Amino acid sequence: MMEQLELFKRLTDCNAVSGFERPMTNLMREYLAPISDDIITDNTGSIFGKKGNSRHTLMLAGHLDEIGFMVTHITDDGFIMFTNLGYWWANVMLSQKVTITGRKGDIRGVVGGKPPHVLGVKEKELAAEVSHMFIDIGVNSKEEALEAGVRIGDPITPYSEFEVMTNPNYLLAKAWDNRFGCALAVEVLRDNPDPNITIVSGAVTQEETLSRGAKTAAHKVEPSIAIVLDVGICAKTPNMSGHAKMGEGPIIVLVDAWHIGHPTFRQFVTDIAEKHGINIQFDYLTGGYTDAGHIAQSFDGIPAVTIGVPTRYIHSNVSMMNRQDYNQALQLVNAVVSELTDEIIDQIIDQTY
Image 1 (cartoon, helix red, strand yellow):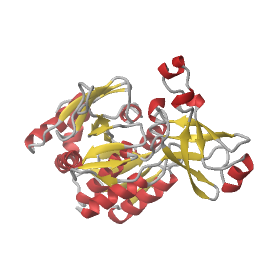
Image 2: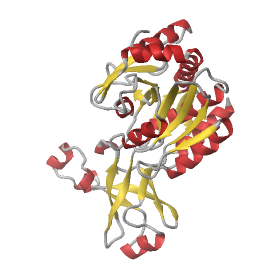
Image 3: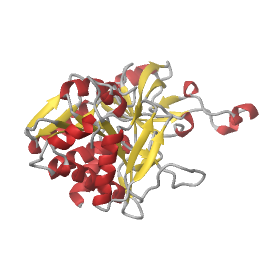
Image 4: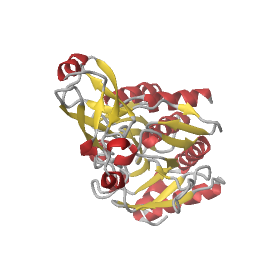
């Protein structure tokens, strides 16, 4: 159990925003290499471990990246201007700590803006705007910022350390979206040393910036079918309705903005959950997407489904996941892997299952 928590901590503490995933690529290689027959990578940094040698291949895909920012300008007074890497709601950004990965190492900063005391009445009623924000690294000039190692184009990562909460099943971290999927990909490969089918399990780059890495990874892996591993929205907080609830099991995504879950493959997964007594939830993300869309549209079409867990406060500096949900998702994917055969995959592809 402590080994799993250490995996969670190392993956979530790692700084790797979209387009700058190398630290996560290297960390995943460290975990995947000892349990894989082969390591598969593409030129963007997506990485997978491979097991088995059957006619069909199941792709398990988390994503390496997290939302963050990029340095775009340094003012004469040493303040850092930035742009988003991935979608942010600006109201969650103010006064949050960040880490700039500069030429000389990590530099801590804080997202600044006007204090409320000097805001006009109309300004107070408006939502925050990224264009009015800046990052303060505690220097007095542009020269000091440059001396510290900051350069235009440097990645900026939200700062928050992994923590076990009051109820030890509740885990707080900065990047469950989507180090959840990275952890699950590692554990599934570890738990299935001799699968009936070929498993290629790992994570792709740049999901948060229009799912770019899923395209190159699918081209590299050439899977027969795919399960995307990503987080979902949690409704178990005040003023939220619909969606899934933490502590009530993993999610199967019915539809998102780019993808309709493959009906035959989804039915197979649902039947496996029922057979093994795993409580599942269903959700939809018409305003968001996962990597399933681009994977499903690769080659002649790849049957794909998304399995996730409900997660609080995604796309902010912190997020919270329930460990029981994670372990049930792990149990579900392990059961799917153990019961898949080449013949069943034929039936899923032909929609005759």
